[in-house]
Image (cartoon, rainbow, N blue to C red; front, side, top):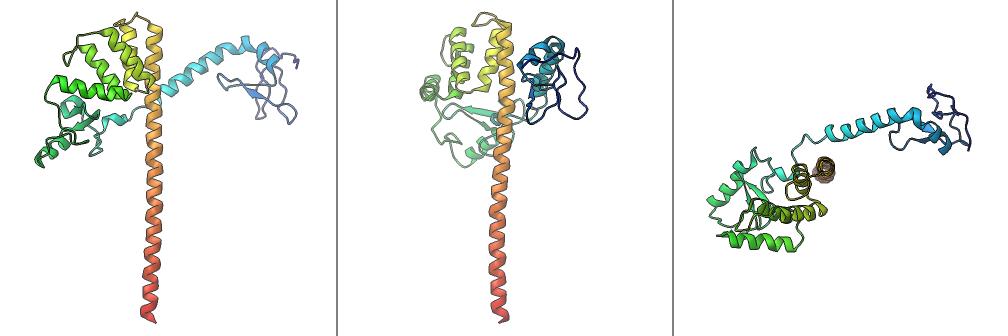
Length: 265
């Protein structure tokens, strides 16, 4: 398709028009959005190429705005891992002061639930009931058992031990980054964030600011997507509960009505 450029972007008075030639969209002429910014439409590839120089600046600006909107319009909620899996309440910040991390199941338990378990005479893990390890060797063995099962949280946690040189391990930044990378591939948002920090500072890996931004951006977007998924699950669960409650209420009302009719008779 060959179009004659009109020289400047065509104003849209309500009808969809090609930004280059001004041709209106019809059943015969299907206009397609600019796939990058979605601001303008074109009747064909020729028009899109011809209009590229005029549109390039606005297109790049809108793409940058969309990235900012995606990064900053969401993500103010606490992530799923910030909630105690037993009482489901958010753990107060800083979390290390108000919770304990269980290496047996990779769960963070709030101090309140841990104290409640102790008062009931339970000395095992409050979540999975596994006996708590007594030394670093046993803790490391539990972590490695979870790592062998490709648990992303365990792999990330083990990377942190190599990073800091804890649990009897020699400090090894390169090994830590290797484990962070593996955990990130398995879906760990924390690993993406840690990789961003490692590449930003050049610790355990060659410094690369571009990669640092990529990993930090992915971690922010992934956190937003997780929160959307959690919200969707909670909404669906609420609706299903409401439907079950309504069904039970209807059944109860029906049986009560039937009994009342029998009494009247």
